Length: 168
Image (tube, rainbow, N blue to C red; front, side, top):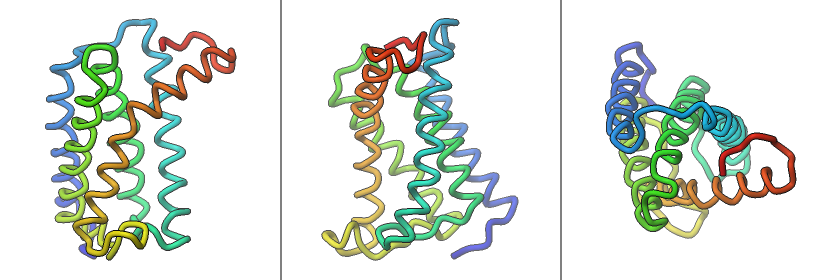
């Protein structure tokens, strides 16, 4: 594992920012009625994945992500960036393309974090696929489920009135 120096952190943040600029081609800004949905989706994903990453490490299916890396990955990348992408492509792109976009950008981020921080170094993906490359690719493919899971969760919370004002 590499030391998480300010320079390495800066490189990863720069990659997040460059990818986010690409995301702005799908959506420039949020309408007032979409802001609540964005923050619910971003916070829901960030908190659940932050905790999930640690729990999955504890049961042996993930490598340990240092706390700063886990925070950056879950709150900045998954929470803020991928939630923005989701609102930009939902309803405008076919589900298959949405999944491919999420897989691709997640793979770019994981490889960047691996090169910069030495993380994402686990030797297998759920004991089924051996090799670190399968581990990184497997979790990137899992991130491809983001649009489907998010759409399902938003519909669930909105239809049951659990969270008012969501734009589904």
